[in-house]
Image 1 (cartoon, helix red, strand yellow):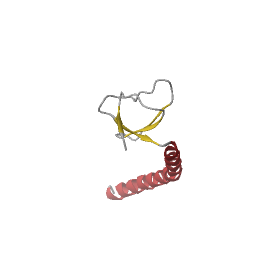
Image 2: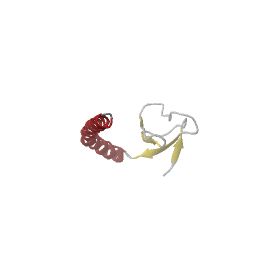
Image 3: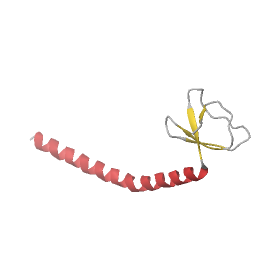
Image 4: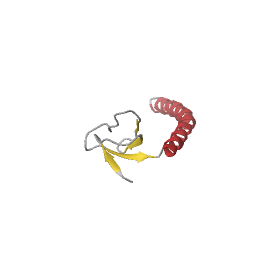
Length: 87
């Protein structure tokens, strides 16, 4: 895949910031990638961006409640263990 750098004029489309995974959509008259020459991007086909966005949304909906439950159980376990130790 061709890599693009920040500050380049590019064609319309969706670009992926390689360092932090952020999607940049460029569809206006001026299509310049943000950042300096050290920032790297790759062009992502539109259908791939749609599929990955949907998969990310489903993962967020599934794992966010799970993380909350695990956090509450962990907090209760920590309080229980500290109460037993401090007797």
